[in-house]
Image 1 (cartoon, rainbow, N blue to C red):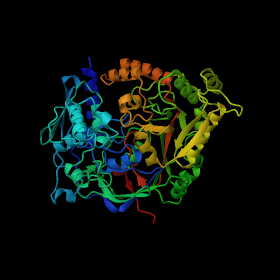
Image 2 (tube, rainbow, N blue to C red; image 1 turned 120 degrees about the vertical axis):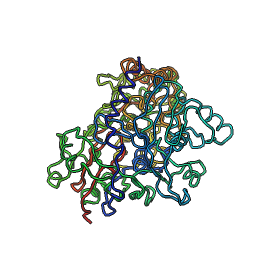
Image 3 (cartoon, rainbow, N blue to C red; image 1 turned 90 degrees about the vertical axis):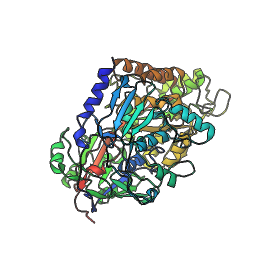
Image 4 (cartoon, one colour; image 1 turned 45 degrees about the vertical axis):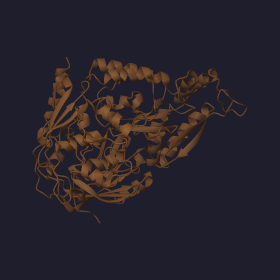
Length: 599
C-alpha cells in the first residue's frame, strides 16, 4: 500500500512547521546599512519564476518570491516546511488529491500594478501561478512539472494552442481555489512529488495584476518581479550587477533552526531568536573569470564565493580544509558534494549525431568513450569533484552508489567501434562520415577559463579517435536559449537538484521534456514508457529497479556521457554570520547576518 509511504513523507516534513509558520519578526528588521556582497560566475537570464531555468536567476527569484513550501534551512537531508502555506499539505484519495491552506496576512510588495492598494496573497494567486506553467505562450521550461498531472489542465493548454490565448478565468478541476485561503489540487494519478513542486521556484506565487501590467510580448515578466518575499529588485545591470533591497512589506520571521551538522551549534548560538531578514541590501556581481572572483574575494570586495576547481588549491588543502592563511583571517569553508550531475550530451535531434540508427548510436558511444572524466576531476577541477556514473547524484533519493557504468574511458574501444560502422580514417588521419564527408562535431561552451579547459579535454579525446571538433563560444544565456530550441549540438551541461528526489534527474531524458529540461532532446520510446510508470510510484525498491533499467537504456543509446559531481567550496568572510549553503535552496541571504561593512 502507498498510504504509509505518503504519510511518512508528509508527516516527517511537518516536524519542521515551527520554523516558518507563525513566525512574526519585528516589521522592518532588515538594516539598510547591512550589505552582503555575493558573486555569480555566469550571467542571469531574468526574474520570472515560470520562465527561467538557470541557477543564478533562481537565487534571485527565491529572495523576491515565495512558494507554498520551502526547506528547513539547516535540516540534512533536506526537509520541507511551510512558507506561504499555513501548514503542510494534506493528501487524500491515495495521493490524488492535495489540500493546502494559505496563510492569511501575506502581502505583495507595494507596486503601481495594485493601484495604490495593499494586496494580500490568496489561493487564487496560487492557482494562477500554477496555470502559467501550462500557458503555451510562455514556453515555460518548467511545463513538465504540470503536464499530464492535473485534472483538466492539459485540455486548457490544448485549447490555448488553438486559440492563441490561455483562458485564466476558466475553472480547472485540478487547480481549484476552494475559498480565499484554500487550494485543492486534483491529480490524474497519485503524485508523491507534488510537495516538492510546491517548494520549487517555478511555482513561486505571482500576482496576475503584475503580469498583466509588465508582461512582454511572450507573456513573460523578466525585469519587473513583484513578490511577497524578503527582498525586491533595486537595480539590475544585465550580466553585470544585481542589487536587492529589503521588502518593507515583508512580514519577517524569527531565526529558529535546530543544529544538524558539525559547526551548527556555534551558528545557532549566534543567530537564534533574531528577527529576519537582518541584511538590508544584497549586491551581486557577475564575474565570469575565476581569477577576477578570487582577487575580489581576497580584496574584501566579496563576502561569499564558491571556489571552483581551477583556483581551488589557493584556498583549499589536499585534505579538503581551508588553507591556513585564510583560516588565520577568519575565512570559513562550507564544503560538500553538490546534489548535481554534469554530463556531455549530443543533440538527439541533430541531423548528424541524432537518431536511433545503429551507426548514430555507435558514433555517440565512441564520442562518450573518448572522454576522460578522471582527467576532468584531476586537471580541470583540481580534485574538486567526484566522477559520476549514475544520473541520480549522491544525497538524492534513488542514488545507486554501487552502479558500474557500461560507458567508460576507452579510446581503443571507441576507435574499433568507429572502424566497424564505416567512419573511415583518411590519409591525414581524420575520419569521415560513411558518405565521405569530413567528420566534424561541434562542441559549445562559455568563454571562461574553466570552459576553455573542458573544451581542450573534449578535443583531446576527439583527436585520439580521429574526430575533428569545432568549438562554439557563447555567453551562458545564449547557450540556454539555443538549448531550449534543440539547436545546440553538444556541450557539458549541469543539473542541480530542484528537489531531492530521483525523478528530478530522470526527467532530464524524458522525450516530452524536449525544448524544456531535456537538453539533449532525447526521445527513446523504451525509456519514456518506463518513466511514465515511475512517476506514479513512491520512492522505494521497485522504483529503484526501474530506474536501473532506464539507465541501462540510456547507456545503450548514449545520448550523453556522465562526467562529474562537483564539490561546493563556499568561502565565507568572517563578517558573515549564520551562513550555511543549502543543498537545494539556490540562495541564503534572508537567513544570514553581517557585521559592519569594511568600506
